[in-house]
Image (cartoon, rainbow, N blue to C red; front, side):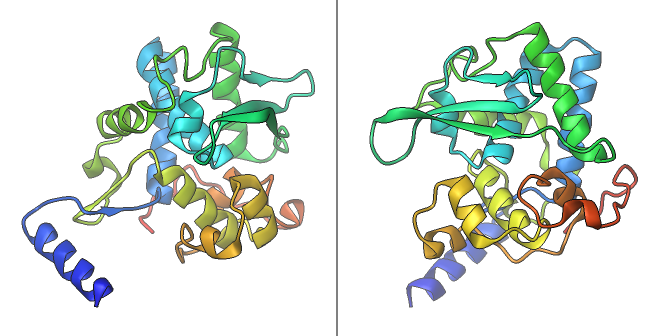
Length: 244
């Protein structure tokens, strides 16, 4: 009964032109995000670039906006090994972690066009501003979700990425996108997805997982979680922008 009522309420809002359904990023949205970040870098629009790069951090590390908001200057870095490093200080349940958690993503294979372009963006931003973090953007644990969602709406207009009527992308879409495409595109084990996203049970993890068509773009994006990545022929993503 509750589910039926919720669907009916959503339909009424959709018919009225209101947004009611939060969704993950489509392949079209992922391509748009990378190209937009590169464009902002090219035109030296560094403030907007770093605001949108916050979404990229959420997508890569499966963290909540509040956790990014709690990062301090120096918590996001590129290690001498080339790994992208994140220090996680706060999570939804509980205040300060007993000890900050370190999460790292290895550099992608040279033929991975998607992840290589993502890493190049981080190299440029962190080379220019080693303090890039929630703190440097004026965020904290409490205000990050609202601010990042605002930046997403400004930087990724719905009409540019073909979102279905009534749906929208928010700061929380990073975890939805990650769980969904790590499973269906990268073919990651549920245990690996749970560990990376900090879900304690498979049932909680599955609440974030949407059944999505397999995407070569997102498979390359989440190469560090996928199975036998090097054994699968890569399909170029530059000309691919279809909606999922």
